[in-house]
Length: 390
Picture 1: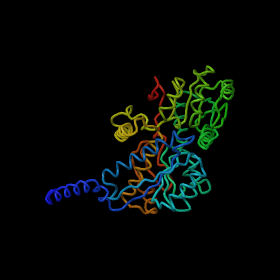
Picture 2: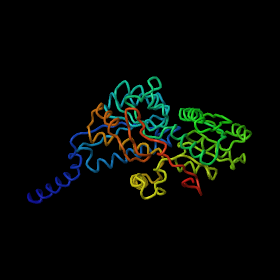
Picture 3: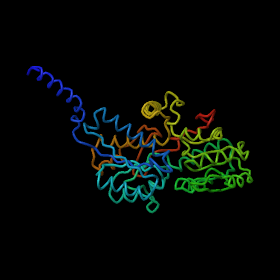
Picture 4: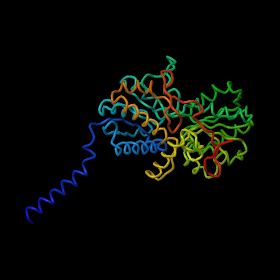
């Protein structure tokens, strides 16, 4: 081979190599963001779509050139739904990985477990769990300084349900709930807010997160002749309750689920027993049902399209929580960079009218959730799919 040919091949090779590495060389530094989700374990139905969503967004951001020319490095750890592991992983993200912000955890219980860490190490954390206690310090009556969240609170979900019940003349109900952090917090809100809506609770039954039969509890409820039943839980138990209800011939009693029911997989697992069930859900579950002038229409439809193409499965409420959390962090990074204190201050003072999957967020010094009950749509299961409730 002649020297000229060698030179040509070398030039072509270097050019190709340059094309291959140029995207990486284009970044001028890195922004590190941590994520802790229940990717495996009892709450994987929450954490798995959250992880997939966050990784999809990070990839999209980096393909578009990053944030301010810097690469977004997303570091995801699996809590397995365990509070102790959540603590260890959050500490690792803070101390070892030195992330600028954290999104997650997936569960109310694991989120509550890591709130003290966020406060101690002064790092912004945006939880993907529901309990209002995650952002509300009962001792001070104010939000925790460093903790925010994206899911609508259980308080807002209860208010959405009770408002709908009042509209339909329902005033006598039974409640049944799981004993998890999510179930216990929701039960408290159902009881606390009932007098405000002139609703009488005639039965109050509970079950454990691993229980496989709620026939006894539902039989007791049936004996109280309620006008409606509200179940508050997550995971397989909320499907078990529906199947037991059907087997007991209680399908004629209106049945409400919490916003924890927001996955199409729950409808499928119920095998017809979910038909007619009502629940409050965010816009991302029903993007195709939103009117054209709805401000969330564009972002929810785009997320739905991207997620289906990337993961080959329908979106759920839970992936939407991660979308909101990471996109909000992205906005803060874009405006103030990676300084933790500046990110916290930006979240509290500058997230105004942020259009997300679960509502239009406006954080403030007195509100680290930033949503109202209008962030919910009352939805009914009809012909094995979501439909807007009348």
